[in-house]
Image (tube, rainbow, N blue to C red; front, side, top):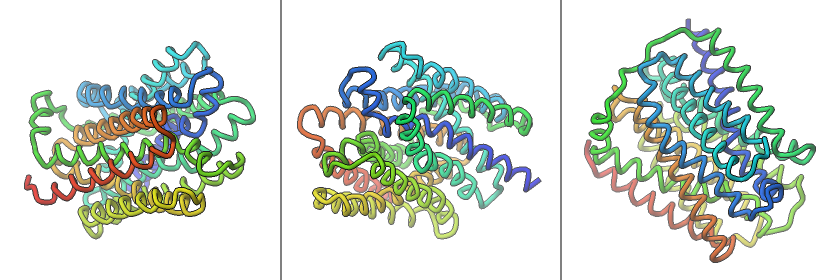
Length: 383
């Protein structure tokens, strides 16, 4: 039984990697999308905003509607939604249709990941939930390691649209394995809208979700405009860009796999406090030495490890606040993550238009400091 559950977790991890690629690949080919649609880079960056906003709004609503079904059905519903968006994205039907397809893809992606988080935690057993959830985070972060550089390579060889055809086909094959492997295991009882509102009235939860938003405003601002930001610091070739993405991807794997797992052993708050501190320090150093690409990439790598340790650990933190409604808390956390993504991409685009690409660094530092201050305040608040 244990080995069978481990296989299921690995399968969920693989599909999380594939759907995660659909979100992160945009950052790697932002310039190519802008060129193909004859729009500005900041306008192309708003595709990240659309993806994030749609998932932030749609995920908790759909989570509420489908939690009455088995986990197997929830996963298949999420994949079905994802596939509609994934196959609509590369059809070259214009910017408006691309915006719509990104919205649909965003809802399907995060709905799948939220369901996979909860299920992986349950499949891991008592006391090992963080370890199980870290596998899903690992899959998501692997989309940066292999997905983004590989996507850049495919876009250079063919075009950026080909990426979504490949991902769509592989996710469809994954859905077949889910149909064969998973049973109709019952999920948690679906919380009512009133219960969700009451959850948000919990001061500690609402403050923790605020931390999530500001932390991921920074994450979004960096990852969305990372390519033009690197070009601003120093003109480099495609091979160097691919190498930097690979380094950042490896860092995200280290962070995502270790964060929640370490939290199971030494405690959630210790991990959150240390990672938040590292994020603040690394961003300040990055801003000071932004003229040097080597120092910038080193500090960006450290930041990437810390922020990916923070993400899964924050999810584990929230899920333990009201264990009976872990699924809705993870859904809400994912929604606030995506809200942070949307705001980061939006304010990042506005900052570029009004000032310069370097001004994004100031946005990142301010947002991170706010997140850290709010986090310190949550430590003083009871349940």
